[in-house]
Length: 424
Image (cartoon, rainbow, N blue to C red; front, side, top):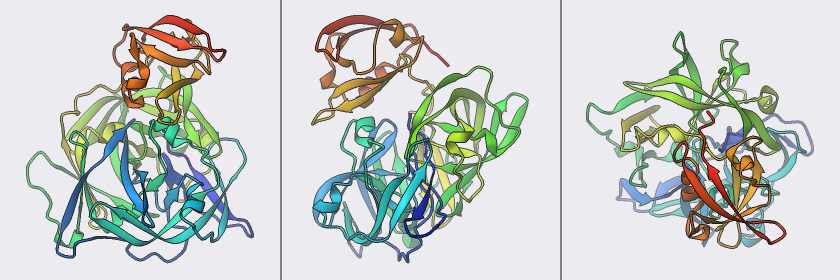
């Protein structure tokens, strides 16, 4: 599960406090002047529609940079400055290195170096950004490609959302970028209209969250399409927030400075206008893993595992969010029922290696170990499946038995059966 990670950035020559980054997450521009970065290519067009990939609850768009590519980017409302996570693009695109920063984020490893570059030309279907600024990471520490199972080169966010009204149809995998001056909102009673507060170049939404039947709180949440989970709450943000008694201790994701630990639990319900979603799977990161806070107070974030259940209209220029339930609305919120983390590797990201095994989980009971490579799932070559499809198998049904053929790090083959178990 991809959790937003938080960072502070400091120029190498003086102390400078920034805002934050992803779910990946960067809050706010780095301080240089930014005109409206994107426009429609056709001066007579008022909108452009295109398709996207949805992998592990993350929106992936293809774009050209300086006439080369295409490259794959996550579309993330949690990002205030465009990011290049692939450091190899610096040489490929002949990027000018501007001010350098030390980037410190969630986790407990050393700070990471990054630099700012500007005037990158970005082209998406029907859209162009002639002079877009990027933050370029010195190392691909997040390994988004391995997490998603397809090459990922960076993240686009606030620059696109402030330039257009963005409509997303997750069930049809389509997205529309509309000129705000000519946009007309859809009509119909099924659309819920929720106000957005834009602070520090991020969108916040305040929602009633029923932590349990007897306690409902209005919580200020970051609208975060770049977070693969449904909901994340920071218990240090309000003394009334607590981790549910029924919970699962686990790694929640990876930050710039290491892995983020915490708990998974469930909240009773979240109210989005007229729509109520119940028994939401919720992340509760450890307080010391998210101690580097953004300057805007908030209680957590709402991610795409929840948002994908709606058709969305994200309107930064007019500060509102429209929601209409789609065919995914009634899907249950489920966690991995096997108890291991897989990493996609190989030239086509179709080799799947066990990264971590949770103690006493079905995977541990089946004898799986870190560095095992899954070769077959129920006699089907796993290389024929995307990582998203593989993930769905291990989220599928409590009690389901799955036959695995595994290649050990030594090269030996091992056959085992995993019985899935709902752990939370």
